[in-house]
Length: 450
Ligand code: TYD
Ligand code: MG
Image 1 (spheres, helix red, strand yellow):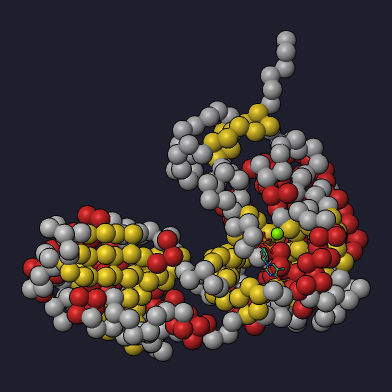
Image 2 (cartoon, helix red, strand yellow):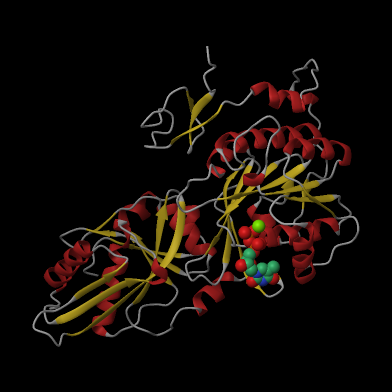
């Protein structure tokens, strides 16, 4: 009898395994996320790393903490985002779109760390050593302490690192790693899972701090950081800011420090430089004194994002006034205009109203209502709004400002990026932890009438 091919199905989002294809993942409830892959010979993971030792459970008092556990990255902003530096023996994942600057940042981190007499090894499967040299010549200097390796076999890396025992190991990137005995394509769910398991053991058993690079694609087809996120200690995301001029490193998960920390960088000809007073720069990028420009903060998942809403209200030259939107829902704009006309007695019937979110962002979040209304009125009256204020709130049909979710995250983001004032729904401000209000003026609004 012919042997059936040994395949199994994995959820691309969470890594759930099933013997048959499922439309919806029972674990993370994502639809259409199952892909078929060859079964992993689970003994291969063990074979490559197990030493067959007996284990001894310990009490916490037996666990010794090392004095100097955190490796400084040389970028104070990044250290803050990491909660003081990279913890020895921890696994850090840095995710981001291709070309955002992950490899560049890590090369610079390596250079800073190795200057403090630490042993650092950079393993790249993406770029040849020549390519790395070319880049390194542009961005930083290395001494001969710093070693590089071009390798994609994760078991080889495991064996080599046990010998070498570096303080810090960079693996660029997890999607290019291959585990022995696994026939899946590099980047497939099983390969990513297995490779990260090997790296996990390497970090924990040998006290090596490891930074793993992970790509995320827009379509989410590559089994990326989503599965890894559960396994690693710290998850950082590297992304553009809303003006596209800066790079933000955002901490999403941290077993050793607080999340919601961000570091701001600027990409130049000689690599990344950290931006310490982000506030001035963020504010400087905006047109000052222009009417109709308002900043708001949206939250996707738990991720806050500042964006600018611009509006232009001008006399219509046609019989019918136009309503043009870019990034905002057209129907929602009609409702907001109706609210302005009825509740504030402003007649916009003979006016063209244009509303746009800058930077090509789209948002259906109700919390942008207040900013849209303020932008329209500001443009209509030709009075600029305060340049360092942020407006968030949902507006109801009678003009009342209703409470929004995640107000705390929005305040933290506004503070971090140097805004001085935030307008928030009264209902949110009343329930809020007062310690959040330090360092920023919070204006509670209950209706658009004032
Ligand atoms: P890279 O670190 O290769 O991105 P990733 O590893 O995240 O894919 O960086 C890529 C971009 O950065 C590339 O488009 C070129 C640009 N860049 C600069 O502008 N200045 C520099 O000094 C370097 C090294 C890169
Ligand atoms: Mg790279």
